[in-house]
Image (cartoon, rainbow, N blue to C red; front, side, top):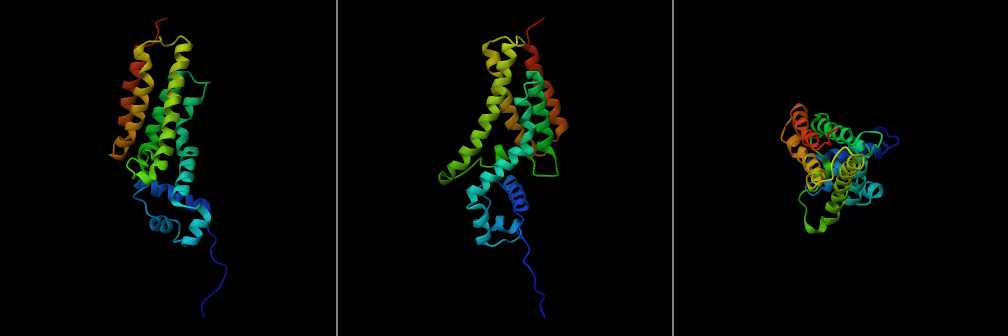
Length: 203
C-alpha cells in the first residue's frame, strides 16, 4: 500500500536562491520557465505563478536579492566614514573577489544578466541599467567628495574618473567569466588606483 502524508511544503526562499543561480549562470532570456520550475524542485506551473506571478516578476525579485546579498560588495561607495579613495578601492577589490569566487556563478548578474534581450524584454534591461547607474552615481559621489575635501583638483581629467572606475568594474564581469582570478584583478586594481594618486593635490 502506498504511503500517504502531507505534501512537501514549497520553500520560497530556496526556490528564489535556485532561480538566482540559474539566471546568474545563463542570463534572463536563455532561461526558460521549464528550467526555472525544475531548479525549484519541479514545482507545478500553478505553484510557480502563485508564488512569483511571472518570469519577469521573479527576475525582479532575484535582482533585489542579489543586490541585498552579493551586491553588498558595492556598499563602501556610500559609506561616508571612509575616505573617497578607500571607498572606491575597497569596492573594486571586494567586487573582484566576489565575482571570481567559485562557490557561485562567476561575473556579475547586474552586468551579464540581460546583455542581449529582444524588444519585448526591454523592461528587464532597463531594470539592470538602473542598478548600473546607481553604481555609476556612487563613483561620481566619491570623486565629488574628494574634490570638495581638497584631495583632488577639479580638472577635466578628474571628471573622467567615475567613468574609468565603472568601466573597469563592469569589465571585471567578463574577465571573471573568462576565468581570471582575484589575484590578477587585484594587481590591475593596484595599477588603476595609481591614476587617482597621480591626480592627488600635493600637500
